[in-house]
Amino acid sequence: MSALTADIPQRRRGADFLMRYAFFILVAVVFVAFAILRPTFVTPGNIHGMLMSASIAGLMFLGLTWLIAAGEIDVSFMSVAALANMVTAALVQDGQGWALASLGGLGAGVAFGLVNASLVAGLRLPALVITIATGALAASIAAAIGLGTSIALNNTGFVGQVLGLRVGVLPLIAVIVAGLYAVSWFVQERLTFGHYIYAMEQNRAAVVEAGVPVNRMLFMLFVLSGVVSSLAGVLLAANLSSGQPYLGTSYFLDGLTAVLLGGMALKLGKPNVLGTLAATIFLIGLLNGAALLGWTDSQRQIVRGSLLLVGVGLVVFARSRRKT
Image 1 (tube, one colour):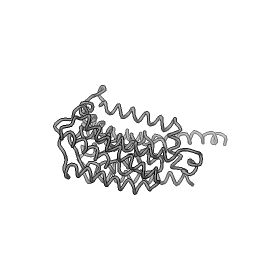
Image 2 (cartoon, helix red, strand yellow; image 1 turned 135 degrees about the vertical axis):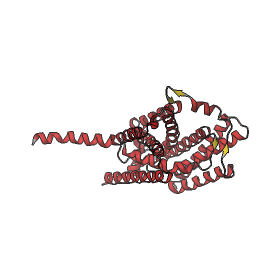
Image 3 (tube, helix red, strand yellow; image 1 turned 180 degrees about the horizontal axis):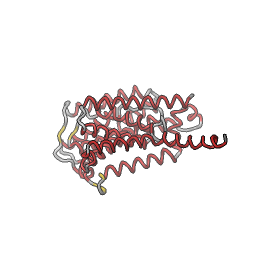
Image 4 (cartoon, one colour; image 1 turned 120 degrees about the vertical axis):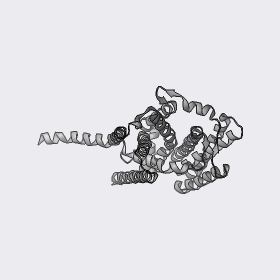
């Protein structure tokens, strides 16, 4: 009987390990399967392209991760990225240098981040309603800048040069984004700021009573979301050599899926930065591999939607279990 009792902690540790790292194992298994089925999946050119896409997408989703972890939402992130993308492209086409154009794109993102922050954190209006409205406004302005069409660019300036730099076989931007996520993980796990974010989602009233400046933290998070989204939009202008007014459409589902699906990793049911990064890489690799296998666009969209349902279901289940 004592041997069985002593074995219980071991089984619990094994279950805890599987719960924390099962998603990373799944990512590795899927990538190995694609490499076996389509050897072109692991060619240097394809890997470089996937890392570039995952880096820009991961940058865009970083602010969203923090907000969902805090129990809030920002559905304007992809429209802000599209607006920054179009502002940058329009300024470059108008003859401005890439430095000024990039600042213009970033300024647009900061402006919308401040609007969201002021209305949600300052006036305490519902985040979902506010960000739907500001997202629609940003998308409309982005479309109006190009009169509903894309803006082709003849040069990508220093931003394109930065995107072309490599550290060994890795794109420099991938290394930078990985470093940014490492810092974010440190904040999430080691600093009280990160702990307060999760506490806000679980019991905001208790956090307020403890004297934590909740509204100030939310203000910072919404501004952060605007900044990283607009930075991703500027990078996309150089990566695509164009301004695309409707690029936000493709990132909306991917962003929510990456953040919620990433809640399967490390902290079950809790969005976290390493989980978001892993889920972003997983999504990019899965869609890329599916395309190499000849899947149609509609089939890939079905996969996207299914993964989003899994992520939402997992988060809801985990949160209800914690409250119980």
